[in-house]
Picture 1: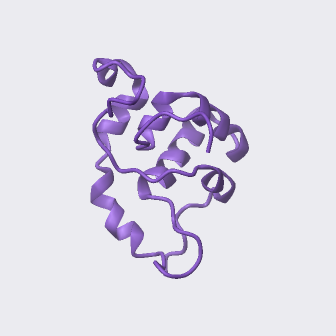
Picture 2: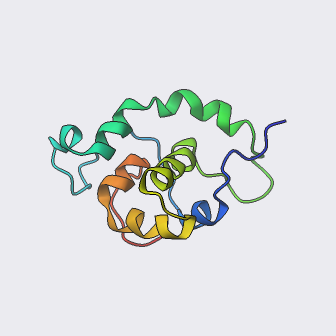
Length: 114
């Protein structure tokens, strides 16, 4: 049986947003043409997040424990961590500071705190 696919518990504990949007929200400080200029925006648009969300969610109890992070946050955080070559803890700060990384994770609006 598949266990919790998110192996980066320290990182996922810090990330406190749920999201699954594929379009740039007007409250994000991103320009409309950012979707083609920024690697994180572009990658976020390429991955079919919603196609995997229901299968991922089946592995978590809706009544026990803390709510699971979305598939997009869990996998997105791992992708960011691997592409930047950082530890769980070192990955949190760039996500807090960078609206493009937050967009990649599917956040609805930019925030610098959790």
